[in-house]
Amino acid sequence: MPRLILDEACIHTAIRNTVASHHRDLVEEVISAIAAHPIVVVGMAQNPMPKKARKLLSDAGLAHHYLEYGSYLNTWRRRNALKLWSGWPTFPMVFVKGTLIGGANDLEKLMQSGELNTLLG
Image (cartoon, rainbow, N blue to C red; front, side, top):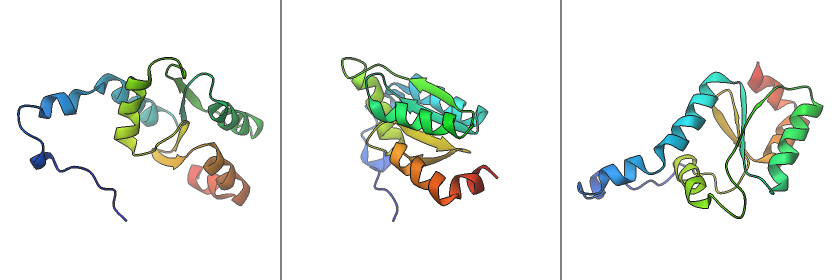
């Protein structure tokens, strides 16, 4: 099922630049990391789930690139730009070979099934 995204034609021309540039630097940083690394974990401090994802990868001997943006106490507006861009509502966001595979629990399922190794090819 395709994700619903407001069509650009339905955004008034006077605000299109605001919509397109909303914390774009953060999104571009994540896009660059995804292009440069086979596994990228995007997380935040104080959240146990990014730690879980990183531990799963480390315990499996899988190198990964970690990006951390703020904590529960700050930077939530900037993190929202990542949620809007990806469509994923929580942290971490785990990317494998450029594909968003979900969060820590999704990563764990892929590891247990052996599918992660297939994705890494």
